[in-house]
Length: 124
Image 1: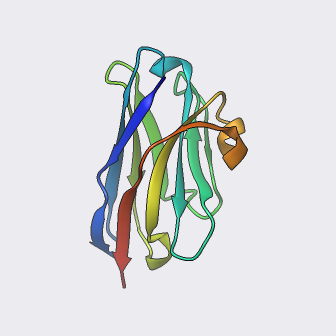
Image 2: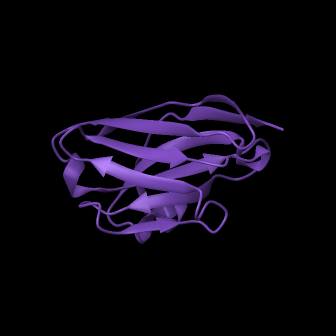
């Protein structure tokens, strides 16, 4: 079993940056692909970014491509989401997730474990 703890959210002005972290417990962390999803108020949860077990393959939603970067440190059991040039429409609760592949994490059905989420608020 893997437990995920998301952190790093907060309030930032448009154009600013934040880095989210997700610390995982369990010895099988490096065998999972990792991803980030987000859920804005009144909207469905949606895919943002994913990375395969080695870090050699990444995928992004079109809405964040070029602004967000996902990375992982298997020695620290941690995955990161660097968010630059934030926009008010990026305001959401961001959830860390594990899956069996970065491709599979492109949809909610591909998630195996969820973090509890961290709130990101971008002011205009």
